[in-house]
Every structure is written in C-alpha cells, then in structure tokens.
Image (cartoon, rainbow, N blue to C red; front, top):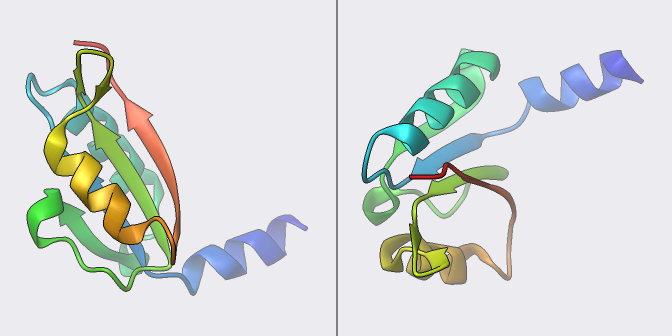
Length: 92
C-alpha cells in the first residue's frame, strides 16, 4: 500500500496555494513543499496566479473574522467543483 501511495504522489501535479498575513501560514506552506517530491510541485504561491489544472491543492490561509480571507475564498470557489484540496490554517 505504501509503495502504491508513493507512486501516485510522484505522478501528481501538486499546487501549494497560500495567503499569509504574518508569515505563519507561509511557514506551513514551506513545510508542505519540503515533504512533497520536488518534481510534483506545479505551483507554489499566492492564489491570484495559481493554476486551475493541478491534481491536488494544498491551500493555506489566515482567518478574517473566523473565515478564510477573500482571496483564498475566491480561489476555493474556482476549484471547488473540479478538484479536491486540503486546507491549512495557522493561528495568527
């Protein structure tokens, strides 16, 4: 099972998309980038220029009154129907 999962990960196009107000969320995004195989990372950065054709999205954001910030909210709506994603949040 572990070998199958590793094979799948190596064949995926991953996008690490984040918005960080204080740097905490970027630190988490950096750690995710560090554990993913480098050749699988299609994109690393802000939601404004993120591709919409990745296989898996790792999405990080800061909260605004208990909700994700507007830029991430807009991005999540774009990918909601076609993709899965794992959202990460770092407390401010």
